[in-house]
Length: 310
Figure 1: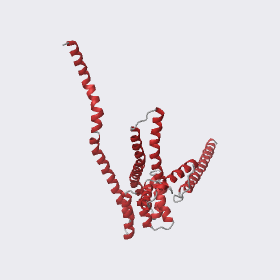
Figure 2: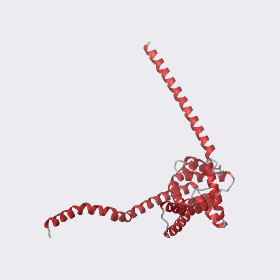
Figure 3: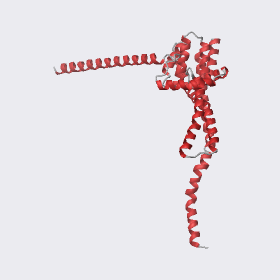
Figure 4: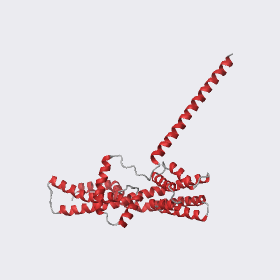
């Protein structure tokens, strides 16, 4: 009788446990699917500009673009500048006008703030005019420098994440997916690795869905990023597609080359470290060592000479 009750209790416990586990698993799977569809509905339309949510920011950008419209007169320079802005990750429809507007605004505000500070402190002389010209020139030319800095940082991030993205592409294509389906799948998985590559792959996938040829879409990917390794990868994929060669093997070879290149770059930086650390060593570390080592001796010598007298 006791054994029968024990079996009934264990059976009841196992049944409740399995039912609870199944319900929780079903709920978690449904939640994952809902979250994925929610993210896809909000993030998978990169070609459509949805506008600015913040009204103040939108009005500020409109005002800056209206200032920059006075400087836009050369179509070729406008095209090159738009390409540079895209490579830096700025895809606003009025990006070139905002760029020139920011240059004009900084060239105006920096000397204005300097003059206001001098007026409040009551310090006005001829040297202030020269400083104002220097501040205006600095404000006008600091925006292109910042643009190049942001572009280099973004290209470095894309370059570092490229081998991992190639590994994901290789896995997807070896599993039987086509190139377009692999790009679509990898673009969803790579968001946590590199947001920049996620957006670029989303744009490439959107171009392929609209009917643009694979060659044109891949070339656009290389031009938008401006990364040399991405351009080499695009050329490799286009040539493999034309010749009928295996794209998977080309991707695997290029991924191995990128990792070797990354290791060589790290070795190069390590070899430059002794030269780079020499100047801080001479300027900051050696003086402190001299003070610690020679300071007591200098104090003892000064005391002995003081007590010895003339």
